[in-house]
Length: 415
Image 1 (cartoon, rainbow, N blue to C red):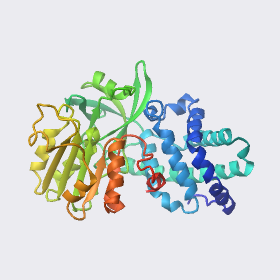
Image 2: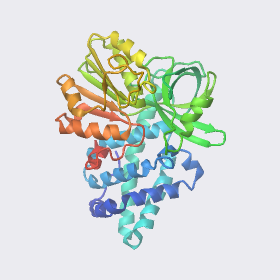
Image 3: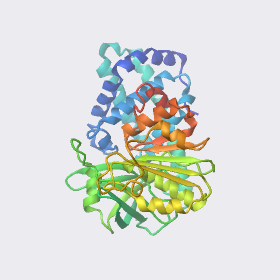
Image 4: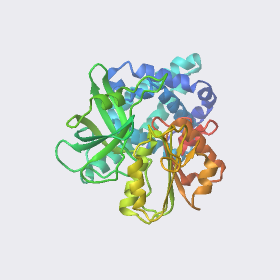
């Protein structure tokens, strides 16, 4: 059992909520600055969420504020704890890494709050940090044990060999990975991702997560990666290296499957698999699984893409749909090209909207959504406003889960 916090500590943490609301992001930015002075610690983290996008400090600020608000009811933070623990497992975070994080967080609080960071505040946050660390360490230990105990399971980094490479669109490519040791692989939950430890010439050590885009099997995983090179955005070092240099025979270091976003395979109820861009990758894993094990399950497949040039896995999804008894599909292009044929390549022009989704879905549908932040920000909030229960809206996007809903960031952090 984690150490119980004293009443005095709870009261002090609650009293710091206004300071966190005002200075939380500054504190988390400073925390990472302090922590990343240690190269060994820095290399544990996905730097695309720091230098390239800057989104991780905001995600942590939301989480710290949620922790303070619920410090007297930590059960409300179960979803947040699970999400963090799964991310840590994919990065191979271990108990020995927690002291450096705690030291950096407390140092950042002292730096930012200055004289307002009294001895009682620092003592309370030290106690609160280690209480949360105990919870996370315990949950991560359980996940590590479970993964290692399963057939084909492992902990830490395992070498995989790229067996096959396939272009899915002009900017999206799939890589089939098999264990270098010739052994089996643990069955992932459809929707989960793999962690990767890359050491790239001229770039250095990188950590990345990529969704698994195939149904579970005991032989291989497939990841499907978009080349990140949008105008005005730093190019994705890892995705570009994979596209330019990863070929059959390339060896990659891979962590076992992780993630709290996955298909509920215990249910046979209707699902809507809704994606934007490369967000279709976990949805393909889900669809393949349904096609293999639940052919009668009602599926509404909705995918949004810019146009046919970047629309990935179109034929594969169509073939999977033909194998199901109750499959409906809608493809939406935001900016179709002249050669993109309405009614053949895509169904409608524009954007996916929540009212249309609710109208198209069967009663009792569970919505699974994955895509870029603006796509999810709109759909998640609007589905709630349309009356869809929170338990029937599940989502994932490629990055840390920060402020999907401007006015509900704390709720999302605690879901």
